Length: 305
Image (cartoon, rainbow, N blue to C red; front, side, top):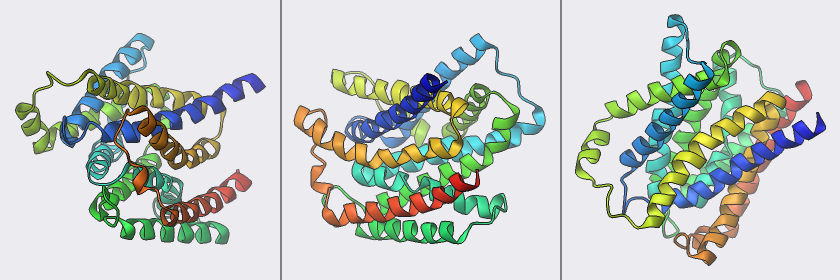
């Protein structure tokens, strides 16, 4: 059992390794080669294809008609809005900021749980939410000061994290009723349908040619589809099978740190543009505020679980 738990911990850590590298590699594709709507379409449609192949093979595809509205909402917040604001935000802002803002997710889940699930926050959790919010607000207001950053981009990244927090709260009842693979397959399917309803998606697809890119761009696109989408969701499912949701969510702390480490590594290897100029002492102090807020917010959950 200890070996199984170790594998689960390693799986969740590796998920954030994949995400950490993905922030930088995705940034290198936009907007020179792909517009955000086209990149979103390729990522989600590729993941849907892989999920359906696996779901049909394991015969985990049936859902109740009464649950379809919730699946659609999960597709809206967990895929469509989440991906749109993430890629548009990443296109405008820095990959460093995206990693830091994403670490706010546990705090956002706690806030939404209070309003939607009526979970009463403790005093310590409330303090944690306030500290994390201050860090996020200061980081967003700091946007557009450094080259390669944007206040609007940071706002989009914040909305992306909030959208995903909505998804985590909405998907909770579905995860208790269906197999995780069934939920993910249908959530991504409805999400892809909603993305296709976004007018710029089809317009940009008709205007862009996917031929003639440098080989490294194709590799980066494949990494985002297979590594950062398909593999991360499968590894998260494996981790949740053996570890609590609280432990699983705590691994998001690693994401901004890993983004910073990959920024230096990829710059040295010439795999991406140099984003290390966006790493400042001031920004690291805001990251520390967010980390403190997230720790206090999740610490009370661990004690009560």
